[in-house]
Every structure is written in structure tokens, then in C-alpha cells.
Length: 136
Image (cartoon, rainbow, N blue to C red):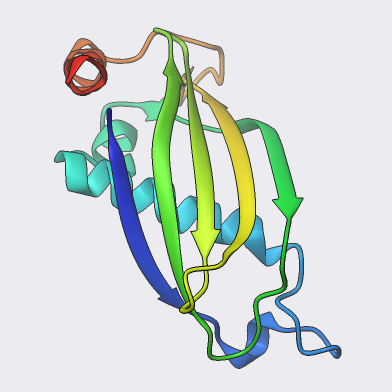
């Protein structure tokens, strides 16, 4: 199974007046996690985009368990939860520096043709890379 842990430190600009990470920032944290997971697998969004493939998010779930605060060091555990030839679903578990689970989430992205923005199949090389990792 493909998974990767990305470390990220909460910046001052990411917290609200209560001192908590603003809830809208978690979608960005998820993006950092999945981008680094793909890079760790030997691929990247850029490589897909260079081939005319885009991956817009079509579904997002976010469950808040504990607040994250300014200067916390977060660990974002990202996994590929599900893969079909046209969609990919990532799951996320975010921990703080005390190893407390603070957030869980899920995103589903769809493969689309960059010029038409119509759904398409994932490139064969990408599908093979994902399927091989899901068998391990």
C-alpha cells in the first residue's frame, strides 16, 4: 500500500484569532500530503500535467478531533485508499508533535483531460505504479 508521512510546521498566518489552525487550511495540508506521497512514489502532479492530465478534487471529508496551534509540528500520514482507472481516493491522518491524532480526512480526485476538462483514464504508467504498490 502506498503511504507517506510529511512533516509540516504550522505557520502564524494559518491560525485564527482563537489560536487554532483555521479549518480551511486542512484542505491545503491534505494537498501537501498527497503531493509528497506522489513524489515519494517517483511521480508528480507536474508529470501528469505535462501529459495533459489534471486531477481536480471532487469530494472532500474532514473530521476535526483536536486543534492544531501555531508552531505545532504536524505529521500528515497520507495513503492511497482506493484507485480506479478514472479516480483516486486519498486518506489522511494528521498527528501533532505529541503523536495525538488531531484530524482525519479523505479526498477523491478525478483524472481529466487538460484541454477538454472531461474525465479520462489515468495514464497506463500511473495505473501500473499505483496497482503495483497496492499489491505490496
